Structure formats: C-alpha cells, structure tokens
Length: 285
Ligand SMILES: [Zn+2]
Ligand SMILES: [Zn+2]
Image (cartoon, rainbow, N blue to C red; front, side, top):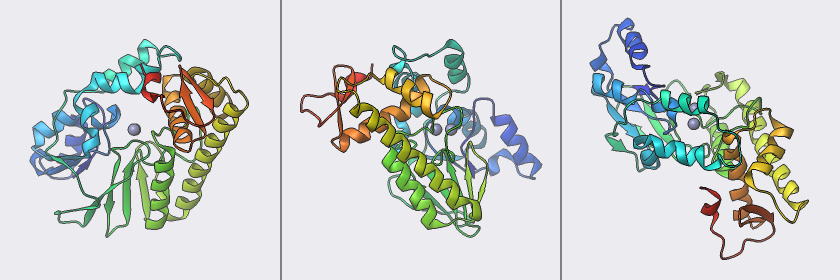
C-alpha cells in the first residue's frame, strides 16, 4: 500500500524502493490519498498506471484532484488582489502536478477497515482540509496522517487549515487514540511520549490565533479586508505574508462568523452578529 504519491516524477523513486524491497510494481495493490493538495497527489497518474493499484480518496477531494487549475484558483488566486502571489510560487504549484487521475473508490463511511493482510483502518481526520484522511496500522499502533497535523506552533508560515474547530477535534481524536507513532507529511515523526505536548501545543496555537483575530476585529468597528488582517496575523505569529497565509486567517473568520462574533460585508470582515444578506463567497474572487 502506498499512502500519498508525492509530487510529479516521484513515481520512479517510489517504484525503485518497491523493487529494492524485492517486489515488482504490480505488487503495489492500493494507493490511499491523504487529501487532494498538490504535493500529495502529483505522481498519482504515473504510479497508478504502472502498478494498476486501486486508488482510494475522500469524496470531497474530487474537485481539486481532477481539476488542478481549479485547485490553484480556489486555494490561492482568490486572495491575489490582496496579498502577494508570485510567479515562482505559481510555477512551483503546477510543476508538482502530473496528469489528473480518477480514483477507483470514494470512501463514504468511516472508519473503513481494509481487506488487507495487515490490519489497517482509514479514518476521516478533517480540519486541515475537509477531505483529509489518515491510515491507522492497528497492530503496530502507527498513525499516518498526511497534513492532519500541522506542527506544534508557527515558524515561517502559519499552520494551514480550512476549519480550526475540526482541526482541533481531529488532534483530540489522535490524543484519545494514543498511537505509538504519529507520522505526518511535513513534520518530524512523533513517538508516544512526544505526542501529547506537540498536539496540545498545536491546539493552543489555534486558540491564540482565534483570540487574536477576534480581538483585532473588536478593536476596529470598520473591520478589515482579508489582506490587512492577514498582515496583522503574520506580523505577530510568523514571517511570511502571502496568499497561503490567508487560508488559516479566513478559516478563523468563518469560524468566528459561525459563532456569531463577526460578519462579512462588502469586502470587509467586521465585528458583530452576522446579517442575513451576507454572501461569504463574495470575498473570494
Ligand atoms: Zn495539505
Ligand atoms: Zn502537505
């Protein structure tokens, strides 16, 4: 089984490893995609084609998995009139993507026990994205979670998620599961002892960001546009201010709106209760 394919042209690297382990490409039977983001799916077509593996993904992955232009538009380009989006970033995004490939199975029920020699389970672990799924190797107690865990705090970039509440709940589910090892895509492996402090620190960061954004809005009845607010957040919590940083900031704004604490009006997020006529999507061009 392969969990995520990595970027375009990664196929030969992975299949070399498969052969070094004494297997052939055809022995790779299943591919599970953690979610639809570019770096995780770029080599899907090349690996699926060469192996004939059965591909599993969450149904919410469909739009971005098969339409890469749409992924770019909806994830980044929509913020580009407010925040920097340079050509290098754009080229890097598309460079990682190979041909689109349609999965064999959209997983509808969770957790899903797989009919494999090893006891494995696919769990829905949303927050980073609604389509995020994790693979749990029951006997070994190893949880492979893709981007469902976004690191213990902020470094150069803000932790990325589409829904802070779901993200926090997913980390709580990891704490309850108590795996021996947590393997995420972009951060160091976490052994059982390191799991709790790292996950709790990540949850604390989410709370701090939530409070900071809410307090900032309360200080200014006029509100802010997404660019201004993102600059405020990155100046306080990270280093890089670009379209990518707007993703978690907007996620917090949407959560605050669900809580009835802010609302969106003519291009600006303002403190106060939501009004009926608001179309949140209009912020997103
Ligand atoms: Zn991701
Ligand atoms: Zn990722």
